[in-house]
Every structure is written in structure tokens, then in C-alpha cells.
Length: 229
Image (tube, rainbow, N blue to C red; front, side):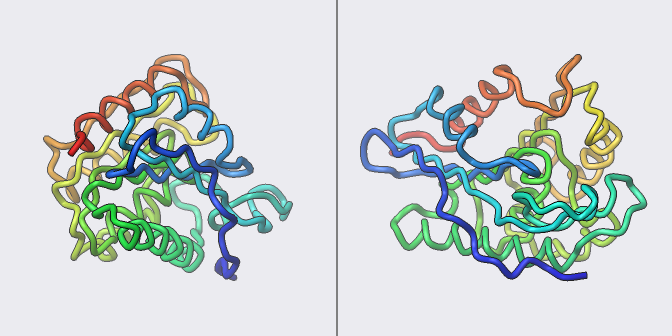
């Protein structure tokens, strides 16, 4: 299976109101872009925090009968026993780590960067955070799962983020990424991170989408993990 060798488009950025001393990098879901997320984060601005809502490259997606769309990696099927695009996940993760490294070069220390995402983007954000060599400020995982489901523990053996704070939210009625994925991810996260640093929220009646309650939960995590300095 081919991995993703394409470069990432420039992200949608919500700048800090003053000098940025912290950053949030957020990855959208399959077929989406970062623009809508930038609008959402513009509503919870923190003066010293910069928001970067990245855009996935356009690529064919097996799940959607080979149609080309914004996608971080290929998805074969969304089932717990499905084949996964491990090469594509790793390559996409390296691109996100490059973005994080660029922010560090720009003067924002890695432990003041929160990495998050929704659905497919949330899956990539979790994988990236838990395989990063740099300590991050936290992770946000909305309506997603932790890939690759059967080999991930080996990939994260040397993670620098075992004490990382994680916010995981999932719609109870999600038909695309069923709540079963949330439960499996929750149990796996407890073995990879300090359970006391993980917040699990199930949103009743919500499908594969994000509601204001989750945005406010993200704001609380940002305020806690990325205070002014």
C-alpha cells in the first residue's frame, strides 16, 4: 500500500493577540479542511496562544471507493479488524512532527504545544503525540481511535509523553467511528499514559461531529496546560 509522500498545504492560522508563547496544532477529519476549525478556535481565543489548523493533502481513499479527498492517510475500513495504512500513518506523523519542530525553532518550547484532532485527524494526533521524542503540553482526541490498533504499543515504547494530559471526547451515537473505538482507545491509553492525566467525555446523542461543549473542554485544557508566562 502506498504511503503519503505529498507535502502539507499551509495551515489556517489564528494568531495570538500578543507574542505567542504557546501553540495548538489541530488536525481535521477525513474530507475536511482546517478552515472550519480555525473559525471554532477563534471563538475561544487565549491572548498568548497561536492556533494552527493544518490541511491534509488530497489523496485517494479506499474507504470511499478510491475517491480523492483531503486525507492524512488511507483508510481501508473502519472496523477493529481492518487492515491499516501503517506506512501512511507514519509518514503523515513525521510531517506533523516537522511542523512541531518548526514551532520550537520559532521560539515555542515543545511542552507548550498541544496537539489535537478530530476523527482521522484525532487518530493521527494521538499516534504522533505518543511516538514523539519531545514532551508536549497535551493531546486532544475527538471522535477518533488510536492507530495502528494491533501494533501501536511497540511503536510507543520510548514515548516522552507518558505523563501527557489527554482529553478524549466521543459522540455516543457516532455511526462513522463507533463508540466501541472510543472504549478500545480509552483502555489502551490507560496503559500508555498516566490514567490520572486522561479525561474521557462521552457526549450523549452526538454523531460524528463536534459540539460547543467539546470546544469549551478544549479551552479548559489549554488554560490549564498552557498558562501565560
